[in-house]
Image (cartoon, rainbow, N blue to C red; front, top):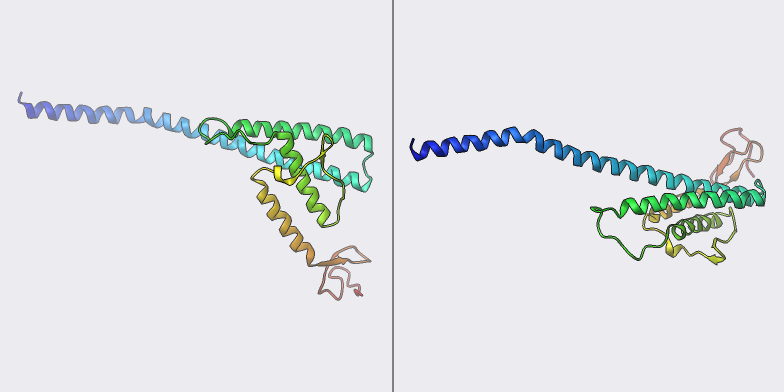
Length: 195
């Protein structure tokens, strides 16, 4: 055998080895993708749960401001929701601080401070539109919106959009209760003349 034949046989062996090992490499990549998908799914479900808890807290505060819930029930329900929300935020922090998710910040506020700050921001939006005037406190101290998480920018944009939409309303129909626009002369639902 000459040297050219040996190199040809070695090249064929390398190609066959690469072809045979390709399914094993694809399985490893598929496993990495499925791990990333499960982390994304868990992150998405935790974010949805955080939003659900914030909405429940806002509704509870609103119901308390309207007098629908007794004070002794309100404090217990609010405390349970805050504990559950803090637990969800801790899970979010743990998931976001896992390796591969970037730098870990040591200056992040605690979960309780973040949830209280978000609630305070929601209350501030409610005060601007005339819903509630209860101050946001955390253990006797007033919580500022400066402690809010970075993803609260979306919350601020939503609140601004709600304010813009609500600024076009002129009130409600005295007969049927339908929301009226400033330009309405008659109720769009029942036809009652608007003064």
